[in-house]
Length: 236
Image (cartoon, rainbow, N blue to C red):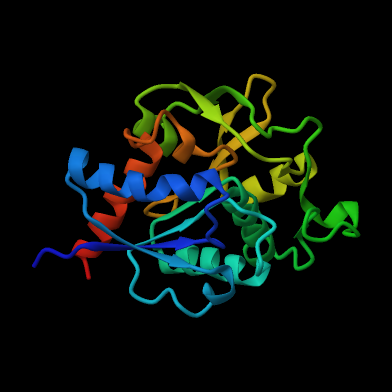
């Protein structure tokens, strides 16, 4: 039996967030251009810890600081442990690293400097960027053979950002040692993509692929999530 894939869009939906406004058009483009039907549901961050049963994919969208940090972290953990296809963009990337640090690396106090400005430096997994990326566009190089490279069909892409925070370089080795792969960097070597090779589909980007182009074409990383969601639905 064919099942329409159900995708949870985790975030505090706002028409003022350009990324959020792009999503309906991308869902329609996936249906029209690629024949993938997604039944999409917005899940507020405060509900994300309890309302994710039966979904075939989880996408944590931008919009941080979120109303519920704990809800976002619970959603990411559900995707990671339940082997549900996951995409995190911008704030979703930042919180994916936090969740991994806490629940895989055992760094119980791992946090985000935006959410907790008084956070001790040694506990900060996400820290202010040296230079803001709000409104920035730049090249990202991806690791050959990685999931990101396979989806892109290339080793370089242009990316759009809207963020002021990124990963703490002092924590990257520890995250990597526990299985998280960093597979995309900018020209200066700063991390822009993370993925979990042991997972069916677990990908996070500091940039916002949903802002690519004019919204009528779906970015390959988002199309990859949709394909993974359809495959997951077929197994239910």
